[in-house]
Length: 377
Image (cartoon, rainbow, N blue to C red; front, side, top):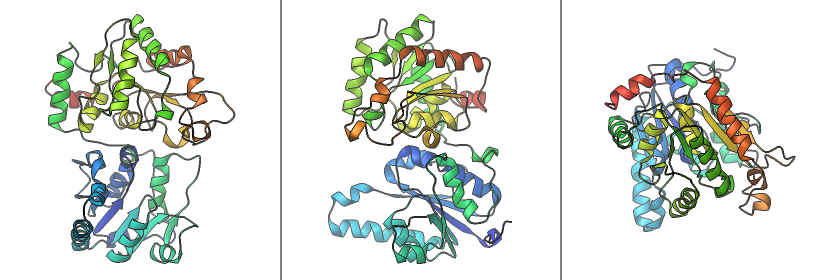
């Protein structure tokens, strides 16, 4: 144990709180696994937004998963109050000894106040008032150029616990489940594919300012086809993303295997797990590829790739050499359009794909064959 370390032997139950988007939640899984490996006797629970629950559902190191539905706010005040009290009652019944807050929020502050754990840790925020400083007494510093997984693990380091971010438990982890595996296996078999025999291209992102110009993505796919590679296309069912994918497909010289808009999040995870490589922008599939140790070529523009890039999987990060990158803005001047993404050349990305393909020839991600066997392929 390190100086000022908590007595982990006195912790019976711990709650990990990550109230953000899907990728953020997936990037928090090393905290859950590391805590469980460090103290197998501890029951580890998590609290996330309801729409991100699939990132943690079926996780082998998680005892209970609690969610907050942001749609509660669309209902009456009475309904919202009932749901909040029901959640608080369920959390209180667990009698947590430790609460680990991974993103600063008023809700998390009040949870610690109301649940009264013996120990609580959260991100340091000088802008927070006295209540936060008094309630969350252990606070870890955040850094601009440090991977988000390391920042999450800093919460455990701040508790005085020895953390090794190179250990197996510090990998990202998600369990698609048998049903999702079987569904994806069926989709692929309809196109004569098994797994490990296609490049998955995922052009979209929650923020379109992170996306590569459509004509360049189409040219890349055409080049991959010329190289004899089979390309599978994926994307969310969001109308604007489906329209973007439609415009990309219209520029292709030959049809592509298109599974966009057809898969749940668990099924998307199962699809990523079967790819020989993922090509995408700063979005959830990059983190899913990291979870399954699938090689990934990630195109980055305004985003901080040192913070949000691939984690512990073979990869290439491609970004334009502009002095202003990465800025962290939603496009140049918050315009929604990013010059640094437009500046990325097709040949540059294609070369990255070929380079990574050569480097990973014969590479088999951990447990790959086991996953495929479960799916009945």
